[in-house]
Length: 523
Image (cartoon, rainbow, N blue to C red):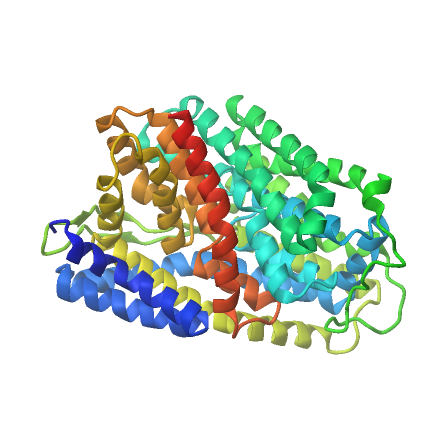
């Protein structure tokens, strides 16, 4: 289809429907997602010549993609409620202020460092689903908690999940990691400082940010430089995990300094009234942390021990799809859909951690009668609304992609800027793809080749533009409606996703803007 203002606006319309309903009318993610999905299907059919066959296949693909995401959401909620019912979250929340009573440092430890570490090990939604409830347990309000957990891990997405997004970038462009790693690593390292500063601002206001600024600079430098060193030395699969782990160790050390110990007598008390396990029985901090320690051990073992990984990945859920073509000639090649490893998936790892933790807590006597039923009930209650929203959002994203609408959006943005200004817009194209699809990985699939070709035509540095693409996608994924829905579902904000998303977008555009400015200056 020819690119003009009308077709570009039509391609953008489903996204506008979701944004207007969630931000303007405060609709929940499931209702707004359904409206966006209906708009995408109708526009693809009526204006982009996507026939019934194409639309049917896109929705089959969307279900497969959704299962990949929902597997993580349901099991992340299960792990949280397994620990929550045992009083473990209460214990962690009580113990952390003993390490530091400084509220801003507490926010940085969980919302920035721990969330980034979880992103390094896990995938979509895990940092938000795990970190946000812990922040609520420390006394932060639910909106603050989700915003901090979303923003805090954005810099770690590209090299997180064992560098899945970066591996995709290499695969679709055909360029070696040695060429691509330096630019993406330094751009994302720069954004780490910004993500940390925003978490500090949300946690403690301007006074908290100013007081914690030395810590943000030290921790940001530790993580940015270590991630860069890992990436350029071909260890990009450990880029986020290794740097965030080092950041956590340094962060715990900083909390011992007088400046960041805080005053327990004047620090606000954490509110644990919403948590279970309040039977007055003493809890061991080590035992309380066992659920998350098991998650860490299992993740490293399954991902880094090749024979174990290969054994668990033997059974895959996958479907092969035919070539799909619109009436205007936009072609999606034939090929397999999203492959889901039934026993080696991130969701499987969360499930294993949940089951092992349950038996540990039960043996320790941490559960009251009928604990398993309460855990299951709360998991279902928290996951149903978010599941419906994600199904709708992913369905909308897939039909837009296969109808050529998403490519048209990026093409219009790229053609509006010349050689001088294009580096400024490249990160926003990556962010747009991640916002629509909820995944930096998908953004790289959609736009990396387009960005590479545009850079070649404009005679710009290809590694720099691709670094801006994947950095923008990393930071844009934290604003995706589907990811916000995940966070809201874990802290009881299922009816307030629009309010939370407005705040996440307001803050999330800042690091993308900083990356855009840096790419422009570098070009």
